[in-house]
Length: 246
Image (cartoon, rainbow, N blue to C red; front, top):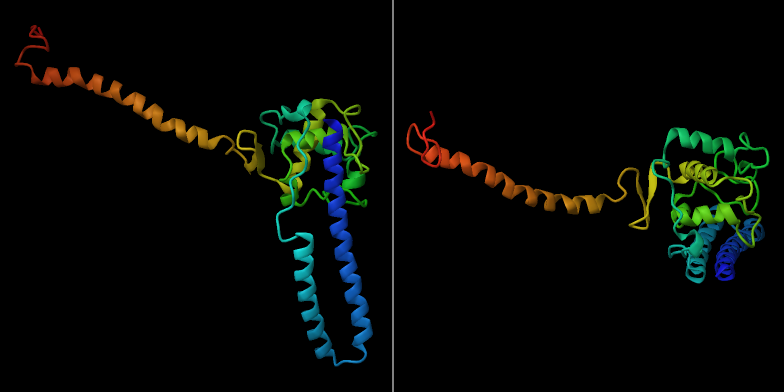
């Protein structure tokens, strides 16, 4: 199971590297073409031709590489991590985020400094590090997947395992802080299996339960009104049931 998960993760990373390499290749081609024909053609003509070539090449690249489609989801967390979820109240909690920041930047533990690769503001400072500012990419991972990656590392990359350096609680604090770069104000809804605005996780289930509660309360309201109706219908000076009110 571990080998399958790591292989899928490695394939995912390799495809992204290949796509980036192809984009750089096209960019280099355009630069060379511009240098070769720039001295021969009029400036305006050259720019127009380059624009047409760029549009055509972009269409080919998107078609060939599948960039027009949403990125493929990463491999799921292995079974032993599937039930790990962010502790309640940790998402967007200022105190938790501040503690996570201290760990992320190496202030809390000199042996752990995530910012040395990912940057203090989430912008990578080393090649291959994930850019935490890209919310669309961050959303591809569940809280369990992020916890798994931080705990065990990512095979085929320089991301190493941190479970021996950080407690379970500290790992969650780091993840809560990392989420502020690209998913600020969001939280992961375990039931819906997606990222949602803070405070809305599980909201649909609560709305469905509301009508049921209202229906259950209706009969009680009718029962309470019945004695009052009977008393109003009784003869003057008598209570419901025919007994004297005095």
